[in-house]
Image (cartoon, rainbow, N blue to C red; front, side, top):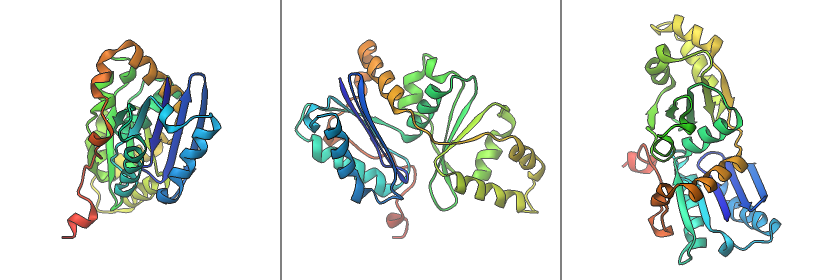
Length: 253
C-alpha cells in the first residue's frame, strides 16, 4: 500500500510517502510560502521512491485548523493531482496528526494539549486524554476531536486545575506560545498570576516533531484491521477545509 501524507496548515510543509518498507520524509519550514514549494517537494518525494502520483492508494491530509491559505494550497494540490483517480483521501484534523505523532514517539500516561497558533494572539486548542490512541474511542479522537479557538489565558483558565505535572503541551510555534505566556505573567491585573507562575514553572512544552513513519503505519494497519475507518475515506471533490473561525477577508466585510 502506498500512502502519501501532506500537511501545509502551519508554517511547515510536511510531506511523507510510505511505500511498503520504503519511505521519504520531507519537513521544510516554508514560512507559509507553500505555493512555491509544495508541488516541487512532492515531485521530489515521488521520484525518490520511483513512484507516480497514480501509484498512491491513500492520501492522508491535514484539514486544519491553521493557516487558511496553507490548508487551501494542500487541498488544491491534492484535488488537482487525484481528481478522477481511484485514490482515496483520509482527511485528518491537524491537531490529531500532531497528537498521534507525539503519542507514537513517547508512550506516556499523560494528557496531551495541542496548540496551533492562529494569529491574533489566539490558538486552536485540542485536548487528548492519556492512552487515547489505545482506547476504544481512538477513531473519535482522531477524526472528530473537540477544537476550540481560544487565547492562552482562556486555555489555562479552562484547564489549570485539571492539569497534571506530566501533561504535555505540543505547540507548532514555541516562540508565540512563550510570548503570550510572558504577557500574562507581566499583567499586574491578572487575577490568576499566582497560578500562572506555578504553571509557567512546570509546563512541559514540546515543539512539534512529527513521526510520520509510525503514523502512516498505524493508519495502514488500521485500514487492514478495522473497516470502520474506511467509512471516513472520501473522494477529491469531497475534500473540505476545517475552519474554526472565519477567514480575515470575511471578517473584514
